Length: 434
Image (tube, rainbow, N blue to C red):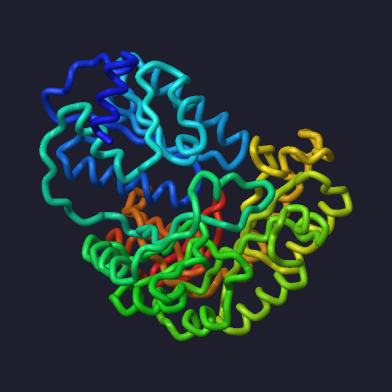
């Protein structure tokens, strides 16, 4: 890949800055999903291991933009970020990776001078160091993240009508179990109190006949203090997975199970692989198997053909299920997907109104859940310790995915402390050490 880059720069004149004499100053911008966040962390760690320096964008010689292309709005945001990076006064090289770079690399490079598209994230550090004469790689250290995301799977073959991801990321593929376990051990050694298994379609994990339940067991056995799944489709919430979660002390009693719509008709048009009744049965089985299970979800407003009755049905369904949190997305047509070509597009103002109604429901559901938890105990993973008006304050996440602030009590980042939930201020739950 480095040879390809050198040839490109000679022919186009994009990269007219001389090679850097000292450590390369770089910045990273990440758009989109948790998988992108994990991959950006990997790129950052590799560049740091090669002697590069992580700095603010306005100080960087190289800016990496990790893009998302799931909707037309995602593309617009990515183009804006790329143009902004390329236009900074220090004239940095801008390396664009991620799904937009996979789907339309020529359009990416046409956005501005000094923009280089590289869809292969694994090759990106080599291209950057080859272009900037960065120092020779040295031994990589361990992470310092308290909650560490661990990518174990990539690719998707679901082909939902609104989604370009199968085209951008390819077919499902998985990291071997032994490699995942080794990475998990490194994360724990680096101070991670929680490891989040993540993937583009996590439920499609498969390596040498081993599926997600076996992976969860293997990672938990590696000594991970807390273990969480990032997101899993309802059809992949199997009895085997629930059995493993129920008997694994490290497993957090929280699942994020995307819904998208509570309407039979809309789910069918989306190409989703379940009905509302099947989804409800899935959640019921999960709650029966895992005591105290909390469920969060994704829900989309304004998919083509969605009627007012469909939208109302979705809100009623979400209220009945009793999610603790809704991640609300307003439908945005993505060129190249079947949904973008559907004739019955919902007007933008209607999509916005329906999304706003779902967000109001989200606020009600979150308030209801938190109110039911006040006065109860929780296990808080400390992610940061900050200065407070009366001493150090711990900020972190509970096992049921509440964001909590609490008097520090001497705890440090990466530690788990027992707390009692007392109230809520500005969307953050307040607690006291036990």
